[in-house]
Length: 327
Image (cartoon, rainbow, N blue to C red; front, side, top):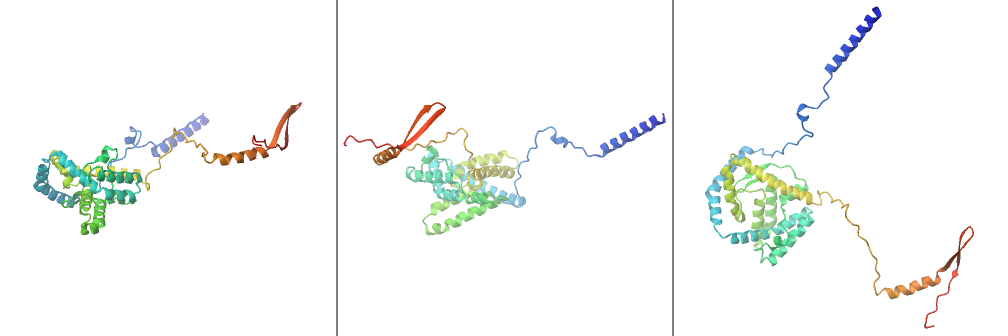
């Protein structure tokens, strides 16, 4: 009886120690919020806006300008026939193609650069100086390209949102890119040779991030912006989100198509490997035939016969060359 009592006491002690150890051990299960979902979803990227208070004040000033000047001018501009507005837009877009081409080269987007160059050549010639966008009808779509985008491909990724007076919403990187492009074209602009090109490129840089005060070629969209403003509770936040999404799509396209950052295209497993066929030129056949005859004439004679136990191969001296009919 004493032995059984001792054994029971020892078992109770072991059970108590085990339960205390389990109670003191941290749970190994994942947090409860992740049990219902197979994977953790990433939170949406926040737009860096450290100077929001200042940006909102500038934004309010721009909106006063829009209501006083831009929206009335846009309404009058939309009264012009659509064909005329399309010609103006196509002409300004064609003038900005050289700067787009230069940035495509700087980004090593060779396919985009070739398309841009082809568009400029076709629209300038067949399109009557760019009044008609013939290249798009031929399958050569317009490409994005500005120095702000080039800086992004080169590694200048993080930037802050800002609102510039009159120009409107953009970011620090794109603002720097616009200044660089304007400075690059300034000598030609001062000489008067490329004033239209300089204006078109500046207008393209201004409209890169979805500016409030769109240039003349984008006045047709100003009324849509006014409708968006009237239907939104916080127009500042909505416009910031819309412009950022548009810009991010252009930047991602540049990363995917650049030789600096884009991934190499994997080989197609279903592709058929090309077969190289060597064909002699007709002019080389007369030169090759005598050489072939000499080889055949000097080649040793190989003969074989079968005997009991296997095949015996006999290699003899070269056989005499056959006499030609002329001999």
